[in-house]
Amino acid sequence: MNHNTVQKKSFSFLVYRFFRCTRLNLLVWKISIPVSFSMITYTGIMVTDTYMVGFLGETSLATAGLGGIFIWTILSFFMGLSIGVQILIAHCYGKKRYTEIAKILRVSIVISLLVGLLIGAIIWYLSPSLIPFLANGREFVDSTISFVQIRCLSFPFFFLLFMLRSFFDGLGKTYIGFISSLTSMCANIFLNWVLIFGHLGFSAYGTNGASSASALSVFPGLISIFFFLVGRENYRKYLLIPIFSLREGIQISFKIFKTGIPPALDNCIMNLSFSVFYKFSAIVGTISVAASNLIISILSISFMPGFGFGIAAVTILGQSVAVKKYRLAYHGVYRAAHYSAMIMGTIGLLLILMGESILRRFSTSSADIAKEAYPALILVSLVQFADAYQMVFSSALRGAGMMNWVLVVYSMSILLFMFPFSWFLGISINGGTVGLWLGVSLWILLIWIIFRSKFREGSWKEVSSLVSN
Image 1 (cartoon, rainbow, N blue to C red):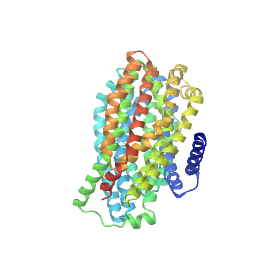
Image 2: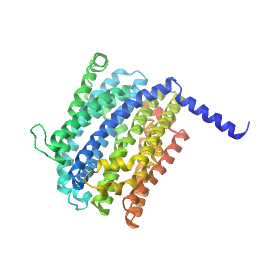
Image 3: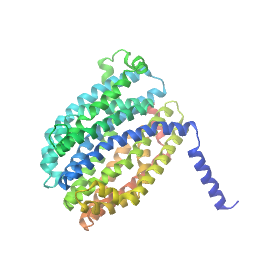
Image 4: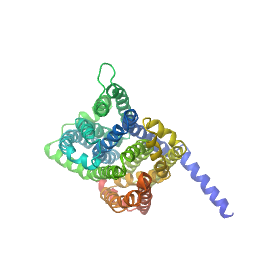
């Protein structure tokens, strides 16, 4: 048998293993598909804001772009902290510790409201100082400050929503989070129509209308997820458990923060890096800021399968290592990574082929924005498969207890690689928007190699046993 025949058989077996109807494959899809669509709907809030604000001109588009990434930075911190809840719930659920799950749920609700209130107040106070720096003195400074402060009012409720969704994700009931986020997105689209342009007797509030709509959209999603929380099964199993003592509350809070702070900082640093990236774009010009906003908004749809399959990897790994099924954990993560790469790679290809027309639809007020954005969109679309792998492997490593290691890799690679390369390629040698995004694309390839190598090494097996105890 020659080498080519062996390769063909190996490839055929690989395709067969990934697409046959096995329990593992079905579990990966069952968990990841609702999360992917759930994250797409959250992203849909930012995308619809971008699309509708795009009718108002490049200054309004730049406002929504910078304000949106600034707010998403804070919300991503909340989402990262809620991952700590998901990891703990998954490990407890694998060992059938239902009383402990109930206590984690209650403590997480208290934490979300208190921390959300505190951070909302801090950002409200600091935004007049931070936004002018990020906007580089451009004409959209005041409108961006107003945009951000309006969104601060909803922080406690968004954090509560993320915590409850992570609770259900840890149980493997990811469809509940999808229903909640779909409800929020539909509410946001309707409220955008009412408040941005002025319908049903309301005045046209422009970018402030978009910000207000996004802030208000959390409440329908929160109401829908509460219906599931007080359902018969969940109420009997998790809400009838006696309330935790102060000592237990402190201990559980410590576990949540210990597990959740590293991924929260991961997300925060990642999004702060793109806030700095907007600073780089602002140096290039307002059109570059608007172009980068379009690229991030469009690519955010492609990112969502990575989030979804990353959640699946965390849940499968957590529930498997809790009963010491390391082989199942390993193959579950790899299966999720391959599926994610296939989907995100396909989306990247479609964006290369159709990206120019999509960009024009999103920048109806200025053809120059689409012209500026398209070459950069092609570059980052080419590495979507690598982005998919790094998202799933990094999520799995967090779920195994290597949160701090992942945090260090993200932080150092951004500071020592992404920032210098983007600055050099985009500003120093006048590469503009294309040069900025080339630096980002090279950074994605780097972290893909690092996280894949670490997961294959297998040291996470020893670390994960400590999380389960």
